[in-house]
Length: 258
Image (tube, rainbow, N blue to C red; front, side, top):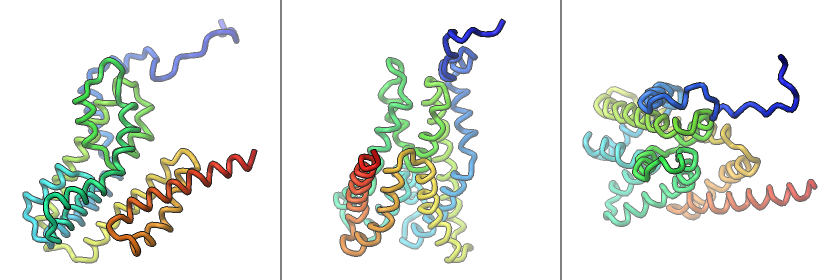
C-alpha cells in the first residue's frame, strides 16, 4: 500500500536502524585505515620526502628527524622548528616560534571536536589523542566526509585514518632520509612544494561559504607583502588581516544585495 503523504519522513542516515552503528569500534578503525590509502596521503608523504632532504642538509640525525615528525607532525611547524634550531635559537624562542606557526590548528581542532564527540560517551583523553592528528590533510578530509558516518563511528574512524596516515608518512620520511643522497636536488625541492599547492586546492574545495574563499584570495595577496615587511609574523598577520577583511567584505556585500 502506498505511503500516505502525511506519513512521517524517513530518519536521517545517521539514525537509520541498519546495524551500521552497532559495528565494533575496531571495524571503524580499520575502515579509517583503508580510507587513508589515498592521493592526499601520497602527496603529504612526498612533501615529507622533501623535508627529509632539508633535515639531513641541516645536520639532523635520523632519530632527531623522526622525533620531530612524530611529535610535532604538522609540516609547517616541523620546518619552523628545524629552522629555529639551525639558526641557533634557544629552547624557549624555538618553542614560541613553533607555537605561533601552530596557532592556526587551534580553531581547526575546536571545529572538529564537536563532530567527533558523542555526548556522555566520549572521554576527554580520546579527544586529546585525536587532536594530535589534526593537520590540514586530516582536517579537510574529516570536515568533508565524517558527517556521512554514524556519530558513534566518527572518532574510531578518524583515529584509524590519522594514525595510519602518520605512520605511513613517518616511515616514508625515514626511508627518504636514508636514500636522499641518490635523489637530485630539484625533484626533492619540487616534492617539498607539493604540500602548499595541495593545501590550497583542498581548502578551496572544502570552503562552504564565500567568506572562506575570499579569505584565501586575500591571503594570497597579503602573504608575500607581510613576508617582505614583517618576517616572522607574516603568517599571523596574513590570517588576521585577511580573515577580517574577508568577513567584513562579504558581510557588507550580502547586506547590499538585500
